[in-house]
Image (cartoon, rainbow, N blue to C red; front, side, top):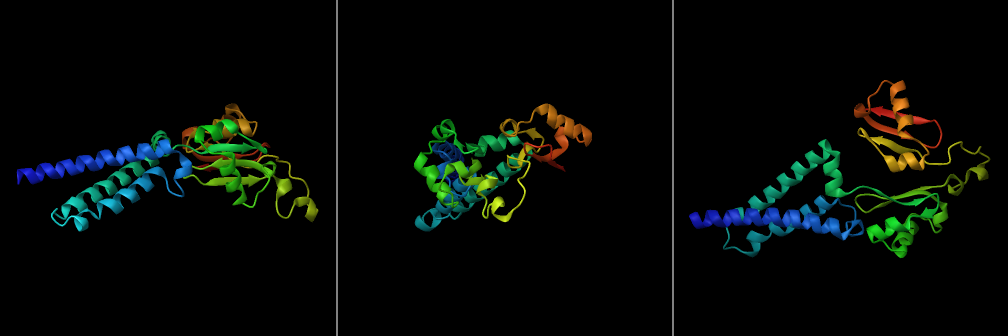
Length: 229
């Protein structure tokens, strides 16, 4: 009985170590490997599918050899999800952060090199968005799940504004989040030509503290959208 108990603790310890190690490995592999899942979600899916088959493939082991590790993985995923919701820093540590790869038609080669994404990979992802010329892109970002989000320049919209006789918009940059859940997005501020002083001025006018701001979006004009927590 004591030997069975020790074996169970060994299984639990191995499960925990494999879970954390696999997440770290997936983060090191880069976002291009992740598809549509976050790193922890992908690891959870892989581990649960393998752990659930232990008792089937090894009848000599007790059923708990599969059930307990699966429940442990599910509990870890719920715990990590709650921590990500409460702590923005933990979410960035676990899943990374979105990375800007194109600004105003200019490709950020340093970011591509950092993420180990080749030019062929980027062009393939753009073609998936029906974009064959990077110069048509105002803003492109690789999300934490590896997907590429693209905002086209207004001149390249389909149909184009000039084709319909519509006036040229005042904003030349897309509406981007400048504050996300109480945190200032410095890269987006710089891209839109804004400063932290402008953010605090807007929040001061609305009498909304930074910590109570869920989302503040703006472009390169004075237009903005504010959502409180």
